[in-house]
Length: 315
Length: 196
Image (cartoon, rainbow over all chains, first blue to last red; front, top):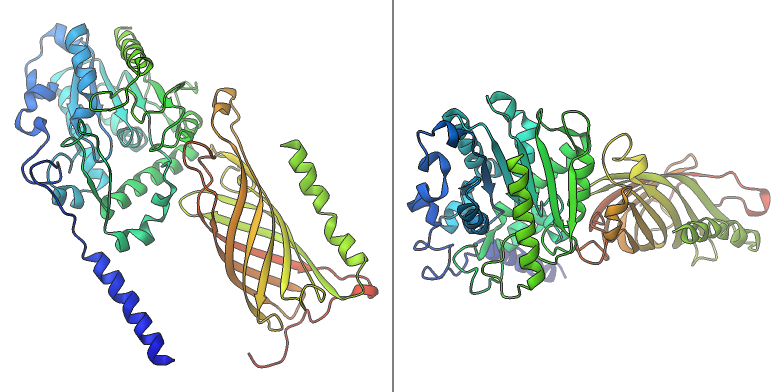
């Protein structure tokens, strides 16, 4: 009997150890996780970062709205390419697409980054734009980009800058994950090692296929901190506008996240922020490129929201 | 929602009616339930615990409770106000001992208060079904304390069930056992002297 128990224990121990040593099977030729495909903003930052492309802004440029667009967990600058294309066409505002720290490189780089590392590129770009004299700085955060920006508000970062953000747009923010297994990442993470996501052909090379458990823990830590901060209340900087756009059905960022932000954020004069529940089933409905199942309604919603953001930045 | 609340409180009357018809001895404890959901809220409230000789010689305990974030994380904060109406049953191992191990299930109804009409489009009601296991300790005075770990088999997915219905929870209950009339006085409430 004791022998049988010992064998069972050893089997379980081996199973756990074997799981811990798992490494993903990375295809370097096709996966962002590998060592051949990188986010294009690394090689060509001038195309993506306004602080790199406009190093001596004129007065007109300083007064042109610039929006720092932060993508989500495990994604890349690709997520905001369509907003940049819209801005290039509209010519009324600039888009500065930041690549979150630890992202866009190899699986190993992604694995070792903390959520503070992810956030650092948004902070760096804001500081640079502020020091260059840009007067109308906006921020846009999709999915995990949203709690990273909310945390910047909560931490008092903007109070240390000479220019307060004029507005913040959050698209499908994640405060609660739709997949509740994430809440058990502390227990299951070391056993699983990593999780895998299915990407469409158009998404391949722009998202990590493998999500190391260390990064899932970072994600859980970030959204839990943000949820508690919202629970206790966060006040926006003076004059900063905020709007949340949230898909009513979202298998990644639970739509309840929108209510948590609405209840938790206040304007500087104790007003409510704006929230719009979008009739969509897409996570980050503003990104349509690379998706296999885009409808005419999805395209119309994207255009309408981009137009609304543009008008808000003009005012 | 209102109908379910009425149903829940009507069911509270079930326990007294059971013991009034029974000649067996029984225990009825009332008390508080404190629950922490992993990565979410504190939800506290009150509950009752009932057992009797006719329930397989006290190996089965029937439970009933109401817990809410209103009495936990949502008290004076922006947390979402949510209510859990629960009934359940446990199987007690070592039921004659002061330290017991239990395993059982809960079912019931969950409601999250969206507060603002535009958010009513989100799922905010759900049936509850959870498994729970833990330890129960019965003191020499008429008090028992339960510590347990539970798992909600129905939990939110961002599509069809409430987003703040999370899977794993930890729970502590403290029950005071009522001093009941002679006909059905509490039996074996004090811990047994038998070695454990």
